[in-house]
Image (cartoon, rainbow, N blue to C red; front, top):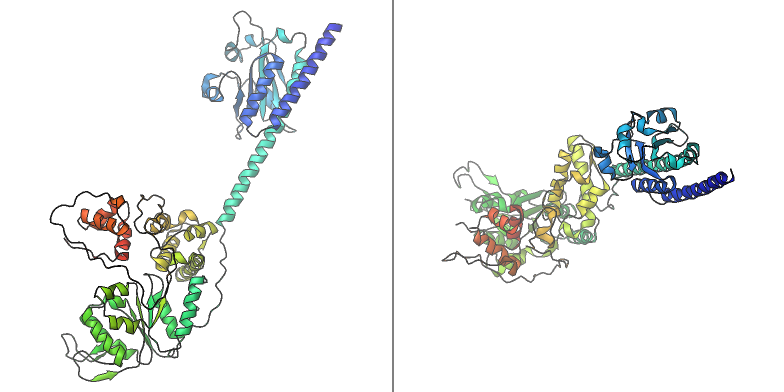
Length: 562
C-alpha cells in the first residue's frame, strides 16, 4: 500500500510539472498549430501514449484536426489518419470525458486503433476529454496509450490530468480567436477609415481675378505675384511653360486685374489656323476679298479694341505672318484683308507658347525683333511636377466640378491622393483634370480609392519619360530626364545648340547600342531604325506612343515622312 501511494505521489508531481510545461508552451506563442503540436509531444512523455489528437470547431459546427502526432497535419487532413469523428461526438454533446479501456474491440475505434496496434500487444485504451472554457465544448483532446501502463495509476487519475490540459488548451484557443477577431475588426476599420472621404483644406483667398486659379505652392505664389505686378500696366506679357500648365487662365487673370477688365477679352489659338485663315481671323476682311467673303467682317484685333487679345501658341505662326503681326504690335494699326483703310486699335497683348523661342530665333524660325517685342514681361508657369503640393487642391477642385456638372457626390480617399502626388503628370494640370474626370466617371461607387485611379495604368505613374525611374508595368528606358533645377526667368534664355532633323541615310543604319547613346540620340536612332513610325519606336524603347510623342516634342525633333 505504501509503495502504491508513493507511486501515485510521484505521478502527481510529474503531472504538475507537465501542466507547468504545457502552460509555458501555450503562453509563449500565437502560432496555435505549433503550440498544440508541442503540447501533444509533452503528453507523450507523461502518459506514454501511442498517439494524440486535438480537434477544434472550424466555425461551422464541424470538427477538424488541429494537431496530431506521428505525421504532418496536412497528411492527416488529407486522409492518412482515420480518426473517428463520430466516436467523439458524445464528448462534445455531453461535455464529459470518455474512456474506452479496451479500444481494440470497439467497432467505432477499430480502424483508428489498428494503425497503432502492436502485434504482440492488443491492450490499448482511448481517452478523450472536451476542450472548452466555461461554455459548450468546441474541441477535444484524445490520446491512445497502453492499458497496462496506466493500471497502477487508474484512468481517473489520467482523465483529471487531461481535463486540466484540455481546459488550458480551451483558454488559449479562445484567447487566440478573440485576438484574431479583434485584428480582423481593426483591419476592417482601418480599411473603412482609409475609404472615408478626406476634406481638402481650401487654398488661401487671393485677389479678384486670381480666385479661380487653384494653387498654394511657392512656385505658383511667384506666378501670382508677377501677374499682380504686371497686370495693371500696358506691357505685353509672354506666358512660357509646358502644355497644360494653365496659360489661358493666367492670361485671363492678367486681363481681369488690369484697367481693361470691363473691356473684351478675346482669345485666338494660332496653331489651329492656317496662315491665310489666321490673317483674316485677326485682321478681318472686306466683302469680296476672297471666295466666301460675302460681307465685311471685323477681326479679333478690332473686337478686342480697348481690351486684351490673347494669342495662344504664338510660336507656331509662319515667318511671313510674323512680319505682319510685328507691324500691328509696333504701330497699333493694320488693314483688313482686301481693304485699304488703315485701322488703329488699342489692344493689350498677352501671348503664350510652350516652344523654346530662343532656339527658334537661333535657327531662324522666329523673327528676333518679334521675339523682343513679345518678351517684354515673361512669366514662366511651372509644370505640375514642380508643384506637387497643389495636386490635392487641384484634384478636389476638379472633383467638385465633376460632381456639379453630373449631379453626383463622388469623394476621394487620402491614399488615392497620395498616389496622385507621386505622379509626374507630363500633361500637367490638363492631364490631372482628365485623370480625375475619367476616374470619377468609371468609379463603381461614390468614393475614389487608390485602386480606382485610371493613372495606375496610364502614363503618370510609369514616370519613365520624366524622372528616369521605371514605373509599374513599364520597361526600363531612361529616355528623358527631368530638370531638377527650377526654371529661371531671364529675358533671353540660354538655348542649347540647334540640332537639325536627321536625314535619310543612303544605306541601312548599322546596329547601334541604344543604351550607349545620350537621350536625344537614342530617340533619333530608334525612330530611324523603325522608319519614323512612332508606334514601332515605342515598342523598341519599351514606351508608349504617347510617351514617344512627348519626347519628340520636348527635343524639338521633326517627324520625317518616308
